[in-house]
Image 1 (cartoon, rainbow, N blue to C red):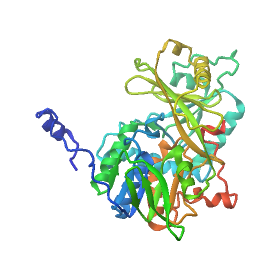
Image 2: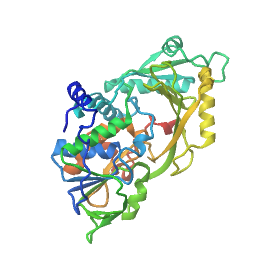
Image 3: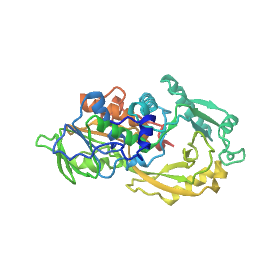
Image 4: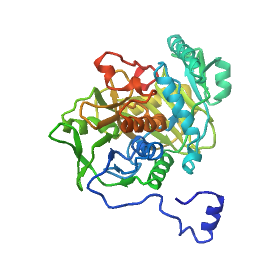
Length: 416
């Protein structure tokens, strides 16, 4: 693998940047592999990378129906945080945030990682009480969260000029999560792909998986793709909102429903906000990108949906709430908008588990799974290789639904 550094950049500049090596190969599709990973998004690519790096499993194919990094990893607001509520969740996300901070060096690919802090703008006393409770739990696991006054909140976010004492929901204070950050979503996909390819993993784009195949004994034996049958004794499904579409072809029902989550981006403006702003009472959040765009997210659709566009009323509700706190933003022009479909479990926590179909594994239920990519890939690779859940993922297997050991996570978008 070609090393990216100042010297390789200067050397290739002299030749018009025509001699760079390809970041990953496009090999012919083989009829069989040890492991097939369905989905070349963040979780699929991270799983393949750690299978090869940590466990030496290199006869792996990552199958992607579209292009690498073109699914939900390209449809999110790139927020990385660990301010969760439950004892099971916080250590997992603390690990993932720490892995993100070291990812640029590990993969030799610039993630443009910016540890810029998340500030929660609190407008109701019940929400403040909930976040204070979250703070006390987070303190046990070394994740940072602290309460600040309204005056300090407005000092940190000068653009926050709304929410005064006469507002319908006046601002009463805030919470600060200093571990939070953002990076470039494309770089995460490309970096993991490049690293996995270097270790021998094959990545096959434009290879849609149409169904899962089971043998006479009921165990998984491969997948039917748009390019033919591919055999494997172990198959991992990492396809976000399409999880149930695939698992049902093997007769497997999962406790998931798919919903749409929308976001939109403004025109670029001069630096205005240097933190991630989250307004849980009003139902929106945003950050300013390196290019100056306001990257804004709102609430999910209320019902199940596989749509990938944005509903007008969701957009209007989000903008209305945002302008009530940031009235100067009314001058901004909308540049683009999108929706991503993702699946959600009954308790709003992820599912990383082997299934009742021998050899079939799933990583699903990621409501805001971008922040979980490194730890999610590492722990799923452990499960696939050893057959036993990693200690960080043990609470998130399908067994919890059989024994009512739900992880009712209030740190997700669904729990407003």
